[in-house]
Length: 476
Image 1 (tube, rainbow, N blue to C red):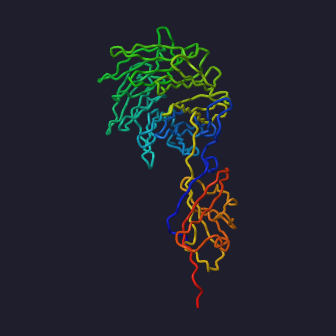
Image 2: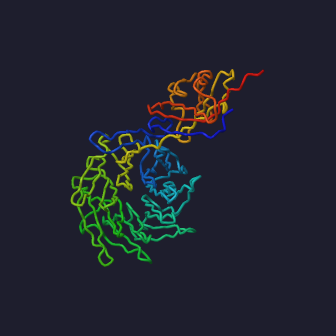
Image 3: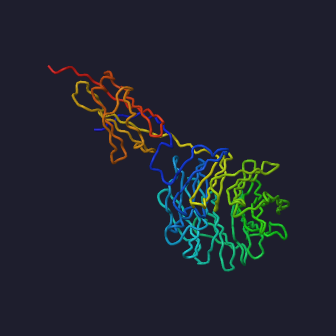
């Protein structure tokens, strides 16, 4: 029988020792000459298009993306050791142009397109299950959605309706969805929404009929819309938009046909935007970009360069600096980025050569220690007993004890194991020679039994349990 006395748990281990992880190949060191850590999130073929990344309160990444092979919406979450992968929605071809946000409970919310029915859908995790609903069932939704959450964790979504109806904005007020149009005709591509300090929406988008970059701000009754890009400038696509602490919008976008990357900043003058346009790089940018602001409110832009490689541009207050993020992948696409509280960038992207879903960051993901629990059986050790074995049970609520190397175990620094096996309840059972163990203990209450060992990855651990040891007098 397993003991019932309180157990003392000492936890020491290394994440990379653990097995059974979903979809992860980790490089614990940065690439040579780089400060970027690169991770493969989902190694399945053509998983990773339309990805979106957001960080939880601990700075851990959550990624939504499209599984093109099965036509499903997917979700990946860092669990401390690797990425847990799951299918969120598999009803038809779903998961194009995903956008993810994390609420105050660190639960994910995702907006995305249902391409089978041309509808806008929204999924949220409630702590137990995914709750999925169709937000716009007009059959007229095509590409492009952008999601943010307000202080009540209510969703606000900007998206694009085709066939001349243009960009739309909808939000949940706790009981129903409220929807507004921003403009008419063929506009609304590459849409991005943010909420200001008053929780009012600001939306950036791109027009296809005159190739302008547009900005819309809620006025209290509707949206006021203005052109951002310069006269005569053909804005190819909006990367994304961010708001600074003064609620001023910042945007990154691409110029046609030169494929230059531009950065636009609004300075509010009398309540209106005075736009400053800066050329970030003029050597050719292929595909979209994604902009965030750091703690100094300087722009940081992840983008796909003219050689289709992933680059990161940082403004330091006087000039732009550039870094090649993933030199080994010759072609990337479908990127998204976020910045944590320490200023570290986090980028999700699709590596086209495979193609697979990748993740890059400057913040080394350090796993929490394993919580190993040890139970000595019996609770009371009788030195007069003629039994053969002492049994030890090892469990963990955040590690796989199957990754413990049983040959390295030592009880009380002297007794090696003689037998071991994994049980069905994720418990490692180990037997030690009773006579050898008894030789290491003294009679008394509260006798501490220690077991040391090593994980397969090389990290050591030590756990203890407390028992009673008796030496009754012989029967007369």
